[in-house]
Length: 476
Ligand SMILES: Cc1cc2nc3c(=O)[nH]c(=O)nc-3n(C[C@H](O)[C@H](O)[C@H](O)COP(=O)(O)OP(=O)(O)OC[C@H]3O[C@@H](n4cnc5c(N)ncnc54)[C@H](O)[C@@H]3O)c2cc1C
Image (cartoon, rainbow, N blue to C red):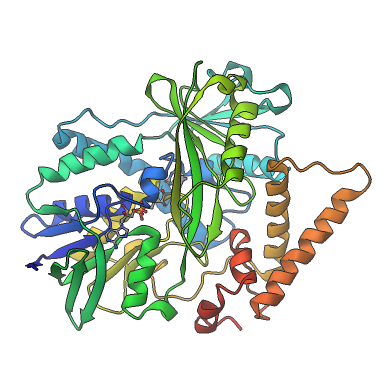
């Protein structure tokens, strides 16, 4: 057993861990930093991500009605501005082929899901107008690399000029090479088994029994951070993390693929269908989402089925003769209120950065910069809005949230081939969905009418997984 001391230790080597390590290494030139995480990165969301650098394209109808999501969105806009310089630093030192942003996101509206798509598409346009974000109308027929089925053809399309993508594996190879040449950062290819906190003394024990100590420890191990939150006794004070299980597929197409990200708006309970282009006609098709209290490492049949079907119907019918190169499963770190956990805990020097759900890859340079400033300049990261020990953030009352959940469930049904008899079934279905959502509220066991459950969390409340948090966070 060996024992080693650092100034800063980051637990986790995903997008957040790496971005934090980079920012800390810049600000703390004479300080020793370690990032602990297995080089193969099992269960890493960042490696499973499409790695779209999307801020506006991620918005939904009503997304910015409340000030907290608006502040989060403003940070996402700032993150977009940080990416070019972030990559420049990595490329200048990594010694491997430069990581570049494939610029442009082609956002389309088709009629393959419910009219929630129309609301979300319009909301994105309206928000881009409000923020003076550049975009241009596209003739859907002019989009290269698509050949959807006639009934799935896009009726409207816009190009978001400044929102693109990077190849996540390439970026991680570049990060690994970058840190191998960075004097004040050690990459430790291990897994943290245990965290011990005794006053200012913080100790990590890795899978081989070695001990690492530092006055500052930053927990950035994605959804797995929950285990360490439990070990340090903060379970009751921090919104619980769930596995936002996402499946994606890497295809090798026999025909041309879109040259830029091609995507729909987010759809009920998930992120719609999208294609991220890679080299040599390989492309990433994403992504499904279901929230679960435990990991499920193997892809669900329904997830793969719906991705392949959507890709062939809505993107390119010629994909039928393409090849499946890889199926990937990753865990979006998703908190009970769906907002991130970013900041210092009540245990001085113990920091948490996770809960980034669907946009953590994009947000990573911003979160890295915020944490480094907080540590070195005593600023408050993202104004402490997402400090880990907090009550649940509530953005909707019960009635609004029930309405939203019904819209999401309906959209999810239409994404999965829902077809109704032509005799007033639409209203009957809406009524049934509403009853099912109301039943989840009843089972959740709180009566506070001002508290609305985010749609993707309904089942976590229905099946009792939220109970412990609710009892400790003032929801009655
Ligand atoms: C299918 C899918 C598609 C997505 N698409 C996008 C997208 O297009 N754009 C976007 O911005 N975001 C996207 N996301 C979300 C994004 O991936 C996450 O928000 C973000 O990557 C989380 O990064 P992280 O560093 O916090 O966690 P992770 O990426 O999960 O990294 C955590 C790391 O910690 C390591 N680790 C775990 N436990 C320990 C331990 N005990 N000790 C040491 N190391 C440990 C893991 O091996 C892993 O490498 C997507 C997610 C999924 C699943």
